[in-house]
Image (cartoon, rainbow, N blue to C red):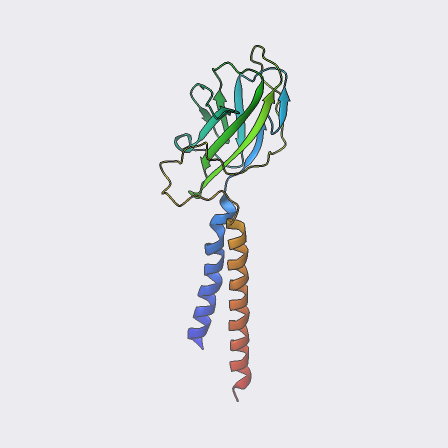
Length: 189
């Protein structure tokens, strides 16, 4: 009986530990320029704000033209949850894609992209800050982080589902063990 109780307590303690890393994935909170923004002048920089603190060694931002060629940039500046990528190339009218890759505090890489359009060529101008989070999607334009092994890529799209499945399995296990303990006690004279 005590052995069964030990197994039940151990299983209960393990369920939160198994599911917790999926809740720690970083995510993009806001971007300047914002997703699908139409700018009358090219921006001087791209500013991305994330939910978690960023590690400068594992933060990458690439800005590219519609033809896939990369825009020249200055040194990436990372401060807390914000990454600023200065843009040094001329940006004629057209669509641009910002691809990013960061590593969450739990070690999982998170990547995505957003796009904006420059409507006319002019001198660079900072665009206003928008706090609406853009939609994110994996982007092949950003090279993988050296800290992450190949095949360990996780863009955050499946981790939450796995956590729910593991939590449900743990709950079923606990209910079954509770029922077994209850039956054993009821069967005793």
